[in-house]
Image 1 (cartoon, rainbow, N blue to C red):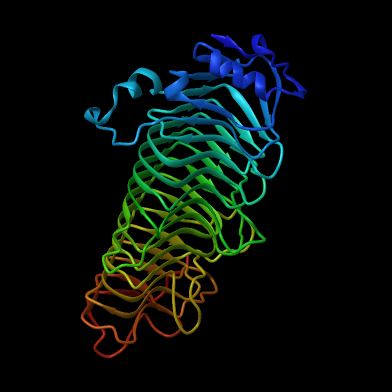
Image 2 (image 1 turned 180 degrees about the vertical axis):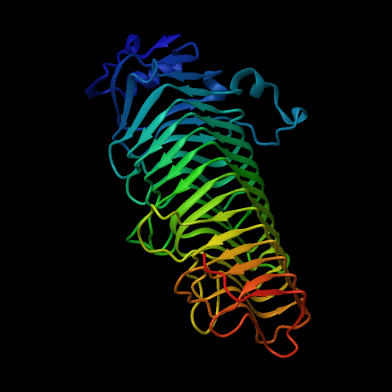
Length: 458
């Protein structure tokens, strides 16, 4: 164990302790301990793992604070691992000198607009536990290549400027677990991936909130951008993900490069989350093989879910319910555009305001094919329950679309319009709107077994 104060660090918050701490890292015996105090830094503390060997950083249960007044990360952990996570791909010195660098129980504060928290490069099994990072440009910054990251029980909070909490920045990284963290108040993104090659990413049991920017057109709580790179094989489960309305803002945004196969982003599961209060709750663009199930969506200013140019997406067993206790404007609803092979199943949508007098509805599908809408309950939609336009080889079946209000406003329960062909609308329970129950253009759909109620008021 190496106490940084034995190497001249003061922890008084005023003295520049950078040289003393770097000396402790270079000459110490691996575990670098920061006693209670505030340590002023003016440049990154470098852990060159191949040179200093197996390393850990401990802040004595969170009593120590690092304040980064220079540019870059307060701590940079740099290894040399440049292959996969297969056992045969490791050089002996990685296991001997570099495995599992660990940071625990310390606070890092950014002292200026260019200060970051922790940067990882070339590491294997980096483990960050019980760390607080705040007022930094990037909380945890992952670059170039890493393997097997564990980020758990951390607070990454209140970023500085257009900040990002956890930033996968042009990194090749497989096997990442982000567990039990609080990642909030970063104006650009809570978690962001871009220009990266990512596999096996799990985000579980986290509180990811209020990562939004009312002064810019783009922000997201979780933003998976694989328009340059590929991001596949991930799970987002059992999180609370919420923010406030902002221009173009999204709670969970996943987008790939626009290709015919939509294959650059996908093989993801989004399950068991609370996702609410943004312009869009979930935006999937050019994604493939995504399952979205068992989530609670609420309070979307424009749409709860948007699928755009997606392939083989399952939206199943989710609730869209504004809750009467929650105030403020909202629209909600599900929109599918230019997509194929997607299923919307067992959804409950109440009092959705999506669409307008001439087009659209609570569930709306445009310019798509092989879309199945089944077993959904659409209750009290402002305009319509289901709208299909320029759609083929699709089904609306076994759904309930009712306007139960004392002063109903629904125009039609289901409408099929435009160049739609070879579709089926069957076995639905509907109430009649002011323009009818099912409105279809000639030749657009086959109707069978639908039941229309004359009155559906509570």
